[in-house]
Amino acid sequence: MKKTVKISPLFFVLILLIIPTSLFTVLELSSMNDQEELIEGIYNNQLEAVLFSTNQFADDNVNAWINDLEKMTWSDENTSSNIDLYLQKNPQCQNLLLLSYTNDQFNYNDLLLEDQNLRKEIVDSLVSETANLKRQFTYFSEGYRKLSAIDLDVQHYSLITFVTKLNQELKLGIFVIDARKFISDVLSPRMQRIAGDNFILTVKQNSSEQFIFSTLLNTTPASVTDEISIWLLPDYSIGIQPKGITISDVARKRAYNNILYLALIDVLLIIGAWFFYRNIRREIKLAKIKSDFVSNVSHEIRTPLALISMYAETLHLNRVNDETKRSKYYSIIHKETQRLSSIVNNILNFSRIEDGKRQFTFSLVDINDLISDVMKNYAYRMESKGFEAQVKLNDDIPLIDGDAEAITEAITNLLDNAIKYSKEIKQIELTTSLQDEFVIVTVSDFGIGIPAKEQKHIFDKFYRVTKGALAHHAKGSGLGLSIVMHIMQAHKGSVSVISEEHKGSTFTLKFPVSKNI
Ligand code: ADP
Image 1 (cartoon, rainbow, N blue to C red):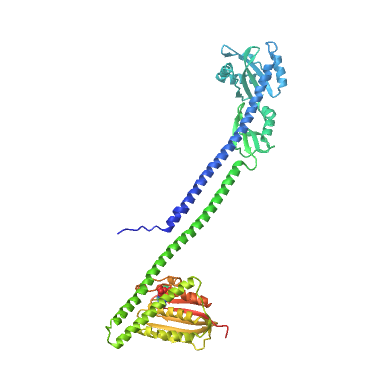
Image 2 (cartoon, rainbow, N blue to C red):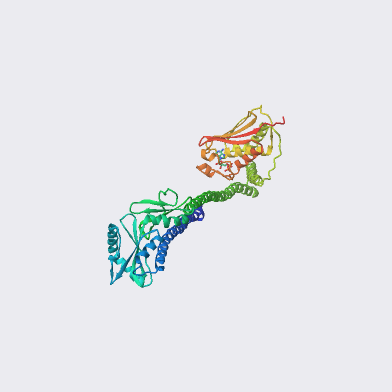
């Protein structure tokens, strides 16, 4: 036997809607992080560029000092006076030392300084940097002047060394500068200009971890976003901190907003998917109900048709000589024809209701009379099936506005069901009464009853309870109660059920009393 694999509609909803949208969300989120990182990267590069340009400015400034120096005319005789003159012109420079370099040796005797401690410190530092200093000469011979910086332990002094050609002789030039003075006189005006309203620039001494300058008057930020050492002042570094809302803040905020919108869209999609799923499920259920209906109705029609055909044929062949038997057969044919027409009527009425074409003709109706008529027509059917009917009519009930034919149809449907769904106890009770402004009709049986969870569905079109042997075998289209419900709505009344499994059911029709009496 071929096995059919049932795929739940939920599976399709998941595959078609939820999985793609969740994947999209995840992709978006990850690309959002990338974008945020990219923006942050660009922004950080910008911060670095600001720091770089500050450093470059310090370099340019010192190169300008060297140019000034080289513009002067130097000779052995005027060296000392030239230096004095030079230092007067460039007060940011504490001292200028010129060291001759011959035969791969620095001539430290050239270093004339009154402060012997400072001199010793400078000589020691230079000696320890000999390799570096020599490399400066190699660079110079290759046409490139490199500046080097040496931090001194004395005060805040720093040495900036360079190679220069004065009076045709290569010399190691040494600017002795007071780092703090250089920062405040040379760098700070420049930093103030660069910082503008966008950034805070700071200078920190690395050895003491102390901020010694900030472009924000007297205040230093708690932390800086980026930091770089000052090339010419190795013990100092410049830091940068964006002011107010930063690009990365904006990027983050944008990312958060996007995540929020995405989440919202996802929620909407999931709600949409849920409705979609519900509709598919309902459609599938409806398709099944319809196919059940077709098979149920065919089944219900087949039995009376078979009986009619059998008895008609027997009669037609003149095989029955006994008059009573013949009359019995005629009556069976008549009864089954009635049954058939009631089935077809039910279906036609239902289809008219569905099309909104069912018309009701209202007049004053005495429910008691109507029930008596129905019971007269039903007497034979009930008796032949062994049913006993107890009819308790309240004579004091008023008239109602109703369509007698439709009410008959409703009560007949309830009686049909009471017969169909009864087992051993074949008893049916019919009552009428008055309750407030309503005429009440009840039809009770002591049959199989209706499970509590099914009770709210039995008035739905095509709905049938198929649990239990009898319910399963009883024939029906599942339309009866939905027609009753429709008829009651047209009468501005209602239909309800009280039922217990294996005990029986009571259906109650509630009609408003006529206002025309
Ligand atoms: P059907 O043609 O199946 O009788 P109805 O709309 O008249 O359709 O009833 C719907 C379902 O309600 C039935 O299939 C049956 O399971 C249940 N039902 C209706 N009346 C009774 C009753 N008196 N006792 C038990 N079950 C009932």
